[in-house]
Image (cartoon, rainbow, N blue to C red; front, side, top):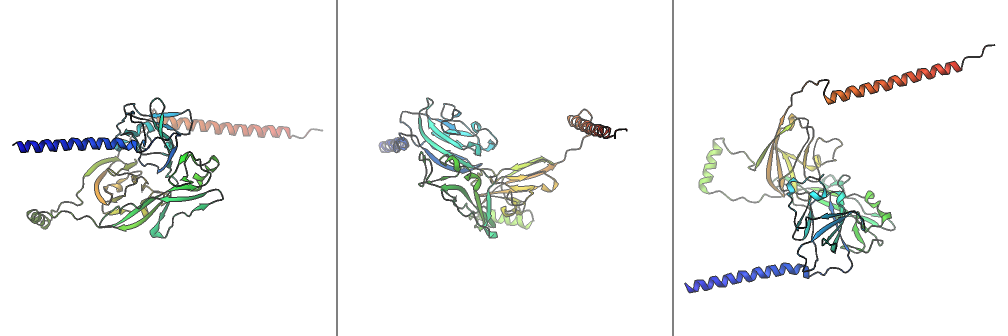
Length: 414
């Protein structure tokens, strides 16, 4: 009995020592990097609708919490304070919309600032410091737009953009790694996101970059007379086909296997694929946006309508001039002017695995008779009345002017 107690005491002491070591090691993160004497800004570039995290890389040991500040332009009098002074803001990323204000899309966790679904207007300076205004670390964030993004389908012999070289600067694209295949067992697709970067010897030295004289095109390090660079080159996406095997699933026990064989023989095999299904009723002629659960814009996401594969080569936004059903660059499936033919079960793949289904039914609203007191009817009658009055006035003025001209043109009597 005494041996067991001694062993338990030793084990408990070891756990306490390991916890203390872990806490000390976590505290050493801020000891490894001294705060710069002169505040500089680290460049970071992202694509719109992405979620990014900015760690406060240095702070004094006595600072138990941090305050984050946002400035669109350096030394601007308009500064947004991104904190509740308690060191944390709870944000449910699944309920965050792209149109929300920055204050509704941020969270502070372990001294790091997290911005959900970043927009182009979120580009600017982010500073980590205290509520008294003492700054520790700064970032120069460049959120590049997806509205004019360039897409290259490599299977169709399309190519990415070439470098754009001038006397004072060079524009080029820096590509991220290829995503994993968005489907398994069948033909899938891979994406590679590329952001616009510029190389020039005239960059502001106060901005810290990974490579000398290289920064993202929307960075504040770019001189003011170079700002037109953003319009000369856009971010881009390269897409290619891929084929990846599905992971092997566990083989059921012998008894379960025999039962499934009997069910299959009786023609009552469970419907596949077996994933969580969400049911939704949507009014006809309305717009619907479907989001893949747990997916982010940088993830490999694919959509199927029943057994039909919605490949990006046909359904990516901008592939055709007029598209009612399309996938945007944030991996959302859009159905515009929903109609009866959209009734189906839509399946979502995430990182090569089928994760969810979305069964859509369409409801039709009966047409109601409009009355003269409806706001729409009043607006139409008012618009028609004003238009009639304007046309009548123009017609009257034309005839009056013609009569006046004829009166002046009468020949004088001898």
